[in-house]
Length: 375
Length: 205
Image (cartoon, rainbow over all chains, first blue to last red; front, side, top):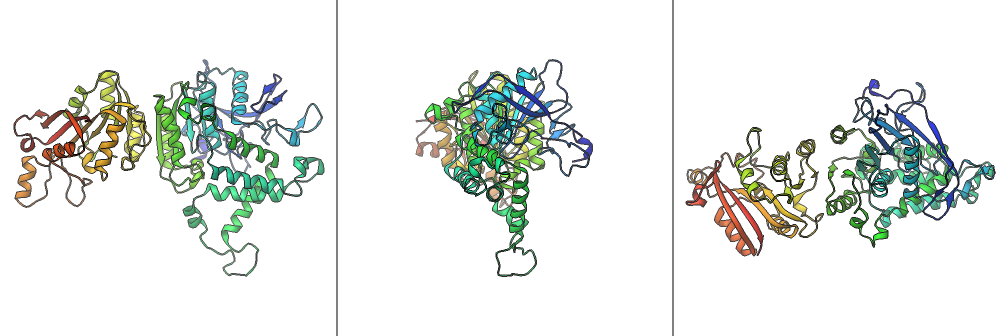
């Protein structure tokens, strides 16, 4: 991917909302702000807007760099840009940091205007439904009545699905990538281990660690290490690390001996240095709670009865955390409602992480689908 | 699942078997095309009958072409059945020149009749005289409808028209209509000998 197809230098923006947001939990967020980024130009009739919803550890910084010296670009930079599959010459692309996040939007690490102290543990538990409501308000703020598309992978795909459910007239296309209509018990179990790692860290202080000037690093680190294992396939880990020793010799110790350990520790350390533990708890809970079929006696088809958006559903063969079978459940529910849906099962080695990789066939699918989206 | 027998290179005219399939489709019908290839049949049926169509296609590049042709195409492997589809949720389920390449032949026909009120199955007739002659003279048949060599053919379950009739009887499948053609021409006389393509319209007996 050439540099000149990049959206280039970008800057985040912020929108403040004073209208209270009633949350699914029953709590109300009296006021909040959302941090977002945009790429491309909104056309005159505001019909070319595409919202990208982020996953567990993502944020609004989808593409481009803040300054030339940034080591890496936004998290889905390979997809978004002039001439890239999500072509910013055609579309006005919006990335938003979800409520409860730690990259600018109102979240546990922000100061609560009512108390002048960090929200900490008092920041409400937010859900996919709440995020979509808040994103819809951001669209109102930007003057966008209908989105040409909502795109998301993993937890982001759940938001794309929820958009189509909650706002049938405001979404023309939903692109649900490497996602699921709810989490399996096994999938939720990983989240629970991650949360337990954080909550039992002595420096968690019931979520009030900001006031103690500490961070539950150990917990976050373990949570992320666990996550990383589940995002990769056995094959990819084998190919990438195998049983390679870091120093070429076994030392009979509990230090880093295998390359795989080195990788996991590096990823864990990096994450613990930049992500907020309270946000991590909330993101995993949003994943756990999402289950649009719940109100319909477990019948997903009934939950999608009013959907009008057209769908592209994509899964990856080696993704065992959001397996193709789960994507097919979404496809079946769409079929039951005679909704337009295209489903691709991409042969990919990278496990769940495949949705972020620039696999040529996967990107050809995205490019072709988006090329046909009318604006 | 790709269409292993005949690829459509002629875009000016519709394949004769597609034209005949079209006669068996009702206006506005809900149609599922298994092994839809590039989506040509569904596109044709959409223009002819304003159908609500979905295609199933396993091959990456066919899948992509079908999508680019505007078809609602689902990438699934027919060998594992049609578990993603509700009972009787389609008016017609089509399997066009793909049956002979299926391993789970019995399963797919039964699944088609579970999911569709009717099924359309077409296949190259192995009993066609040219095929018989080639075997008599000592070679595996290679022809327009069977274009592969024995060592590279995807076809694993070739049959004759008489064989398929017996298959339907054994599996309690009712034949609503049968057409046999050779190069687009209707064959009434000695169909199992003179016909190279068999087309069946089926329902559960």
